[in-house]
Length: 179
Ligand code: ADP
Image (cartoon, rainbow, N blue to C red; front, top):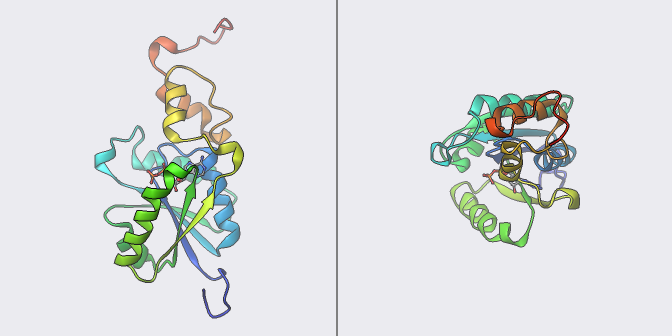
């Protein structure tokens, strides 16, 4: 807490892969933006994860999705999140929790980050019920078979994701209404 004992005046980091950003992510980002004065959505550059979208693509999709939320900016980082938060002077890491299965890993990461940067706290926001099942990998699985992902990702990036991920055999022709 700051001198006023509130969350105001604090810089929060929402880290993640965002490969690609979903409505579940956006819900967490919007809610964080209401709680904290400044929010940085930080895309993890993780060569080990073999992402479907490049860091630049993920940042671009995020930027278009958060357009209009005045106190949110999008960046990327590599290396340790603890180092990045220190470099930014952030006090809070925001993570979303979907299920109990998320908890053990997130709890471990929160403790490790606090050990490495004593000035950082992790705040967990519970998913909104309608997004509980939603993940980037689920979106990708549906999109590659030509499924409709419009209920799962921001409207402004929906077409781009579908066109990019849909396998050739599942591409719909403009006049094909049978599928
Ligand atoms: P990571 O690989 O770091 O978990 P993700 O892009 O999968 O990155 O997720 C980033 C953050 O968004 C995580 O805190 C994750 O729990 C949260 N998140 C992802 N999907 C949802 C959802 N449907 N509801 C709430 N939080 C979510």
